[in-house]
Amino acid sequence: MTTLAGESATAATPDDERYEPKTGPLWALRDSWTEAVRHLRIIPRNVELIMFATLQPIMFVLLFNYVFGGAIAGVENYTQFLLPGVFAQTVLFGSAFTGIGLATDMEKGYVDRLRTLPISQSAVLTGRTLSDFIRNLITFTVMIVVGFLIGFRFEGGIADGLLACLLLLAFSYAFSWIQALIGLSVKSVEAANSAGFIWMFPLTFVSSAFVPTESMPSWLQPIADANPFTKVTNAARALYGGLPAGDDVWISMLWAIGITVVFSFLAVRKFTGSVAR
Image 1 (cartoon, one colour):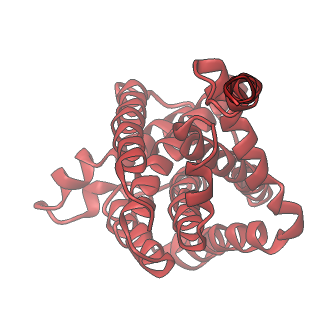
Image 2 (tube, helix red, strand yellow):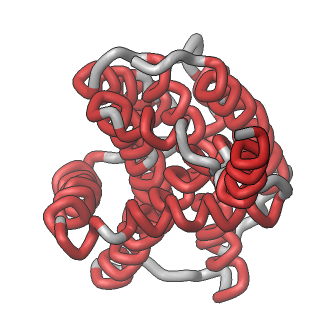
Image 3 (cartoon, one colour):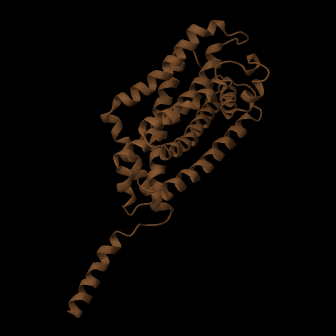
């Protein structure tokens, strides 16, 4: 009996080791990409998701450019002024998919299943934010094409234009981590949808995205000028338009890095420390 028990224990050891979680950054990256691919595979089966996510910013472009453009005083070329703001708003609103998607997975019990698997726990969130970044990239590319069709140009050259795009996409990824924390903190998908969008409207409209901050009331101008959304919009507008960007580019990059670091830490801590719903 003792021999059989010992043989059973010995035989079980290799099988048990298979289920021990792998550690290290390479394994975490592999697990993150595996999780990202799972989300990306949904896109071909749910084309409407990308379609409706793209139609909204296109409507913003057409409405603001052709309906309100003639009423905006002090702006010589409103199309060139407007599009960087719409691009910034597009990637910001696109980050909401992260919170809604996480809340959906939590509600359906998928995240509970992932907790039991021998994978990097941070990969669950990293994979989600990475897949939403790629989805945002698709929407952003469509918006660039629409912009060129209505007269927008990289007047500062291709290099500065690409730098502006990278800056906006960096903000997109940073705000996905804010949405990840929101998705983990609320109790339902409906709450994630509401909480994920409600704060973005004042952030985008109390900024230089659609009108110069000089046109705002004097008490509101300092708030709008300090808004990180204003910083990234001004930086992108200067790079696209071939204008002096001043400190806006590196300040915007610091905002993107800071938001990513702080909220990724908070979201991962929330995820690993929370109990299953």
